[in-house]
Image (cartoon, rainbow, N blue to C red; front, side):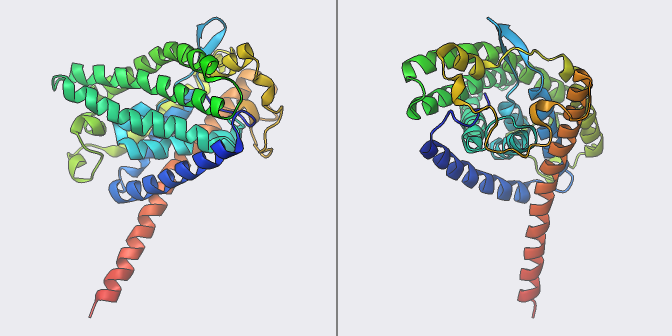
Length: 333
């Protein structure tokens, strides 16, 4: 669902950049205030896992593939604002380092997957959960339903943006996008429920939505090791990116297939506006074997996403601590 350059009009792109930029600033401040020194790496690990999982396109139907979106998983684990930051990091690195999604459409992609797929759909999740019994099974049912809805609503937002851009009538874009992504959403729901169920089984303290609050130092002071959780998440993410991604489906994803079928695929330029991506198309340069090139790209990308996600939160936290220290020094007699 990564929109390339050429699909959305300038005013749509500008508005989305403004909204996504504002939400990114808010989410950064929120993460810096809320996540402690031990929890900051977990945001990076979640981002790394979503990056790796998004490389694993799975066949759907009719020559179409889909991939994990991950916004609801991040929202369930970290809370909606932290999830938005995760998606902004993942999508930004995919665009700049791998030429996946256009630079002009980056704000739109972040809005669709982070704001609609994450923040909005977390509200839907909360509503579903409130209507169900307070059991683990009901919690997982709400998780699966919200994950499916997140894919359908994000694709619906994409269809509306294409129509507003004059690319394709809404009457054609909406049923095509929502229809194929309703199928992709089944995979999204299954993956999200599986990961959340496994996490609840071994480390329920890592699931923010299960506690009814986001991660805080006080709630995780249970004698449990964050280091083990972080290392386990990193190993899983790297394993997916290196050993599984080379076997992902090569069929076009939902948006690309819709663009081919309806006839607006040629609006995307052969080379995007951003031409400095070091690893375009997830193929490490200089590696002759296609599978190894994909594995190398997956490894590099996972490490970059982990470092950026973790580093951003640490930087914001350190800046906040410095400001507090300066304020305390100024207030001292």
